[in-house]
Length: 205
Image (cartoon, rainbow, N blue to C red):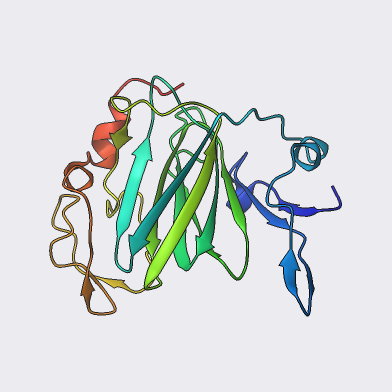
C-alpha cells in the first residue's frame, strides 16, 4: 500500500473512503499511479471495476443526487481538471448512518479520490470555471435505472459551499446561485423526489 494513503469510514459512515495516490514530482513535472488494483487489494478493497465514465461541466453545474436500484454501483471518483464539491449520502436503510451525508473537495491539485460504496446517492457541484470529472464503476450503466433525491432537501441538509438560495419544497434550482451564477441542473434532477418520499420506497440492495 506504498502508493496510496487511505482514510476509511469518513464521518463514521461505513465504507466511505478517501484515497490519495502518492505523487512523484521533479523539474519535468510529476508521475502518479492513478489506480492500482494491487494497492487497493492490500488496502482491503476487492472491487472489480467494469466501466470508466468522464464528464465535463462548467461552474455552477450541479449533478445529482443520483442512485441506482436494480444495478447499484460502487464508484471511485476524481477530478482531472478544476475543482468540485463531491457528496455521498448513505441510503442503506439498515445502516446506522442512514440519511447522513459527507462531502469532499476534489481537485486536480489535491488528487484525492472518493470511494463511494453501493447503496449511496452521489452528486457534485462544480466550483471552478471548468471541471473534468472521472469515475470508475463496478457495474455497467443502465439508462433506465437511475433514481434521484433532491439535492437541497432539508431532511438531508447538505451544505453546498458558496450556494445561496431558499428551499421551496422541490429540487428546483430556481433562485439558487453560486458566486452570483445561477445553478445549472438537468430538468430531471430538478424533479427528483424528496428524502421523505424516498424513505417510503422499497429498500435498495
